Length: 128
Image (cartoon, rainbow, N blue to C red; front, side, top):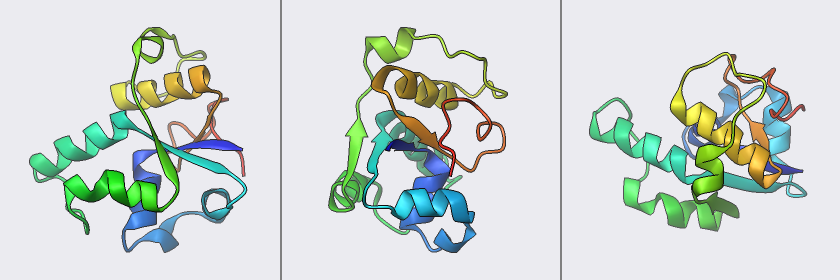
């Protein structure tokens, strides 16, 4: 399965709270048979939160792309198709980062791996 890890899921994977990820998403996340992707939108969100002191990382911010590469996680750039694709059905969140992740899933044929209650029931979310 081709998965797009959301911000919370990746932070749990690279941080000290991986045990907090529920079993089904954790199984999908750790399955080497799955392709793992991460959005440039999520990197942007992490950078904003770090600069506003709303998030502390265990790694240097600038080291994230290399860390992701080392974990076999591919970064998905944002392009015009992602920006213009409507997300149907409308998600239960108005967060623009979440909407971008869902649009990228639609365009790229990915499933969103998330633990976010507002997104886990969306048809584009991965089911464990």
